[in-house]
Image (cartoon, rainbow, N blue to C red; front, side, top):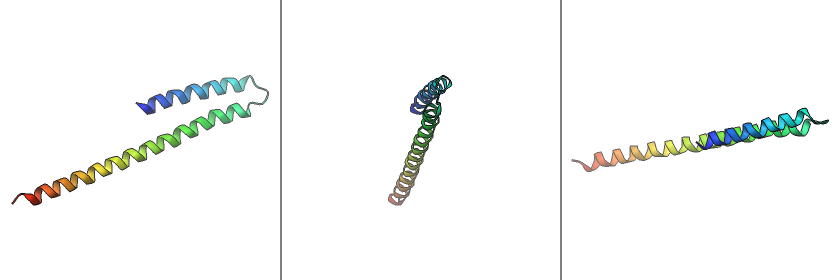
Amino acid sequence: MKTVLYFMLTICISVGAFFAATNMNNPLPAFSLAFGIWVVFFLGWNRRLKKQAARRSMERQFEEYARRNTRKSKP
């Protein structure tokens, strides 16, 4: 859900910057803002995906550990 909110915010900022670039004499700052916000979005998205994968891996390891220990305790 957080990703959807960030995505919508990124779209709003980039569209606003592109519209501003159409009316400027030097549109480079607006274009750099528009493309820069997409870079920030994808870097944050990649970071969140990595954290989610690490969390899943830790949960899987814990489940394996718990399964191994419950089997050892039963004769």
